[in-house]
Amino acid sequence: MDNYNIDSVAPGMAVLRLYQQTGEEKYRKAADLLRKQLASQPKTSEGAFWHKKKYTGQLWLDGVYMGMPFLAEYSAMFEDGHSFDEVVNEFRLTRKYLRDAKTGLYYHAWDENKQQVWADKETGLSGVFWGRGVGWLALALVDVLDFIPEQNIEQRKVLLDMVNELAVSLVNFQDKQTGTWWQVMDKPDALGNYRESSASAMFTYFFAKAVNKGYLDVKYREVALDAYQGLLNEFMLVHADGHVSMTNQCYVAGLGFGRDGSYHYYMSEPVWTNDIKGNFAFILSGIQIAELLEH
Image (cartoon, rainbow, N blue to C red; front, side, top):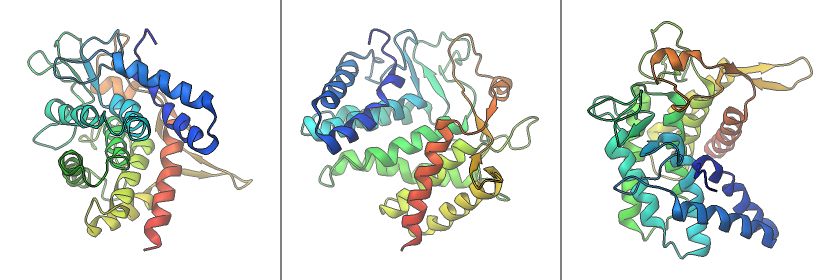
């Protein structure tokens, strides 16, 4: 726990589900431990969770998904929603500092201290719109809304406004030929850029779930269906034995360990097949698309 790595909190979502299904106390203890980490997780001056203790003053898009759905569900289950304000504040600050007003997309990370090699000296922002980074935020938005009740109108409005705002921008940067999205979202013609499957699956899930839940207008139904068809057309490799693999997955991208956050950096990471960060999003998007097709 001393590392205060917010990535370590994400498995708490599965832990909570196992506790609900089994009632076994070991799962409650595990969830409590993760909640204890978030209670003392270092934060920026306005209350955004640092990505890790050693990443001083840094808010990353990834971390919003790694921590907030767990915190929202834990709070709904065990705290009578006491932490909902803290959860919503994380999104509010993410929008305040990481969103680009011109494109409506979000930069990967922000350094409050403006000291990292990748951070703009005036804004503290990293310089690239990374597909899966925006994907993590999109997932977090629609998943956290599952746990904040309808009567919490102001809290939900913050998230719903972000959902609708982000939907417009994602449509603007969707590849019109394939229905998918690019590794670096705003540079489709740049040398080496590629259509990236994990982000595309996350955005498919975002659109399908948001339409299913009534967060987005029904006009976005076709966006979701086009995106899912794009996943099947572009990224599904069917093997002779009938199994399928998901291709074109960015294996990892981060801003620690001396990574400079440049366009070249995001092109340098391995492109993978069947990594869990893509496969889980593909599975979840399929569940939401199946529900969408029933209506």
